[in-house]
Length: 115
Image 1 (spheres, one colour):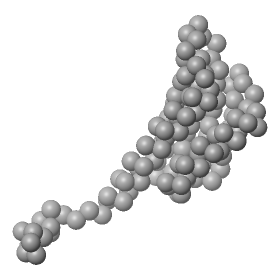
Image 2 (cartoon, one colour; image 1 turned 90 degrees about the vertical axis):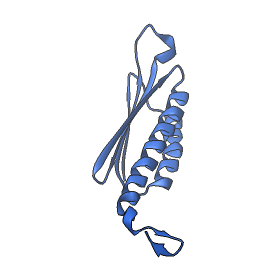
Image 3 (cartoon, rainbow, N blue to C red; image 1 turned 30 degrees about the vertical axis):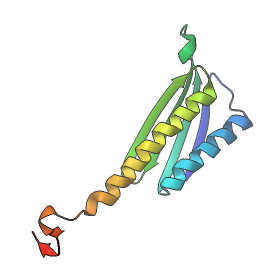
């Protein structure tokens, strides 16, 4: 897995890098076929104080790119929201992959007999 953590108008400190890595562990625990991860942490120079800190991630898995973004007044809160959203999307993607081989409704058995 290739991991890139970058900052825009922000220096990515070792504490921020470690925080992102620990949050990404939860995502990779659910789905281990992650090819590439790009994380962008941004401080926007807006007048809206409550949405200045932004976090974005692009997760490349086999056959699909998953993009998630989140904004908050605190960068750590934005990262938390981001990883929650990303985790939900990764689990949904994994379910779609596994649900691909479902049993046709004609073949379902009812009380031991074919319906």
